[in-house]
Image 1 (tube, helix red, strand yellow):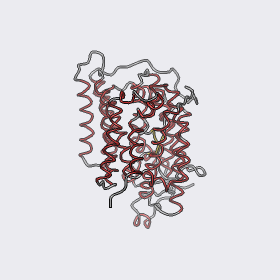
Image 2: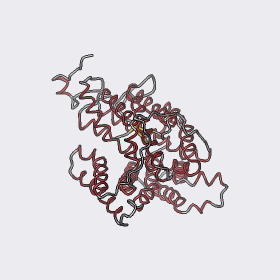
Image 3: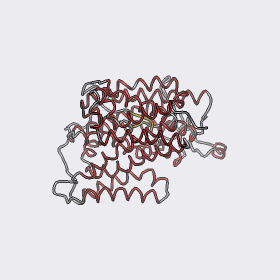
Image 4: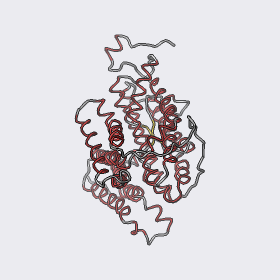
Length: 442
């Protein structure tokens, strides 16, 4: 099919150069796709890196998890963009590994390793598939008050993980202050790029800071190299490589976050539809919302099969659509191809797996802080009155309290301890119950 170029009428009535169904030269589509990949790349690789470091997995295993995350994100993006049957939104919406599941994944990893992490992800993914049929009712349960509390707890509960990475030695023999200096420098660079006020600088700030951190460590001789993970050139996924395990006591935090993810996906897809100059109401809009949330659940199950972790829509692509003026799903196919290509090349995963801990800690400290700030922004939508402030105070205190002092739960049976050890479960359930029980102020 010949490329369809936007004509003068289209250009005068639209801020987009290419709309959703427009075709463009493949080279241009590949370039746009690469920009999307650069904007989302760090977000994809960071969760498996954090999990691998926190669980003290060796570099080859860390590299493998990174490669599988890239492949799973590529396939998930393809499903979301192409919209096969009822699955997928059909919009230029990218998918990647979700930060929101880090806390319950860490809890599962410490209890049962990768089999339990992957088993819990797979077993609870159908809840989001089911919720896609009732998406219009979700907001009645997860109000901005409850959603904001849960998102805020996700960010705050992960900040200590980032701080521990910053405190880790930069390299054998490195001075004690070197790690803190590296993390501080990386954060300062991200802030400086944001201050520039340029769209490209804002969207690529984390990726630029990552490359700068690698360069500094290499120049200072503090980059610890290890043996390659494999002698072969390509790495193909092996489904269910680690097996699966399940513990019902850990299901609650996974279920809560899948529900929250469905609501976040609805918001992301609404923004993408609006930027793509597509309807944000009516039958076509709701068809895309249901298909996008269904794809979220299907893709999370697919990721678990491929030995990776739950996927969700990324909001970074909305900034790239604004920057480039391209909303064509053709670019999304190139995003999927690039991610899968990067995933099957073992050397890419190996290079990322040797990232110094303080460099990862500096980036994630900022990213987790942004997650917490997003929770605050959601809470602002609730226009907090005295009742809402009381609910937020109790839920946040309970959630962070059990994380800081797990011994508070020692009197409970083991199954109950496992359920309420998660700050997301304790705080989220308390927020849901109080929001339903306490009368609203006039």
